Length: 368
Image 1 (cartoon, rainbow, N blue to C red):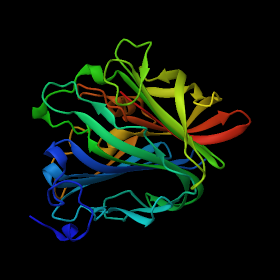
Image 2: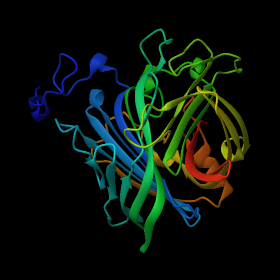
Image 3: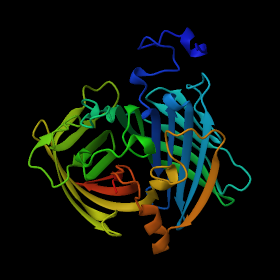
Image 4: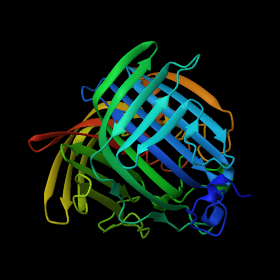
């Protein structure tokens, strides 16, 4: 039925605003953010997604501080209010489009964390050159997603177990994406996405001064000497990325190749360090050295969590967990992937990045 949103001239299909094109159960409209302090003492990450086909919306937040990871997750029913970015105690407010967002987690009894953070940016969003696609399923489209990312700064405060930490001069990143998504909230009866989607995913966004950069590379099983865009499902390595300056300063410069030399630990699942050599379409090279400062295990955000599946209906769900990330067995559990398919954003590292004579900061998201 029609809702109040249908009063606005924003329709893009011949349906009311409760529906999306194709009605695929994996269809999602979501946001993600990660804010880190440059001394490596604190990271905050969050996710919020609305799933029109299941009339569901969920949100989660994780804080890495003092050798622990604190997670909260919430779900609610969507009833004509997809535009209300509030789920449980988490809210995301657009203060000024493309320039300022406010992310909050209200304090609650039995909940170890809360925060009030404002993300600000004078930098352009970094948009994909084309949708991320994978159509070779034989049943339906399983990946058809559009997205952009943005780098900026953050300020505010985070409270952890009664201790309030002022966050000033932190570095932040956010992402918006919408469309059909193959993983993280796999609905069981739909079956597994095929292995041809890829075997390893590397996503990075970084910023230094008046410049930001983003790159996403998905390697196929067995590797490939060919490179295509994020919509190439022929078995080539998928690649997209760009360099962006301030608002209204011309089009971003696309990345044409990425040579990654990464070192891992925890059975190849957690980044230990490494380097990335990027080539832009003007022939410029960008040599980056990566040093992880903090880590968020994204199972806490619901990416692969056994009791909190994205997409599925979960009205009224409220969950809170605390993990001792100095304990190897605990970390192994957070890194375990029993979903049967690639999870592109299973772990997030806030990194210090040496870029020539400059020091940049960024987030690397890796698959398991």
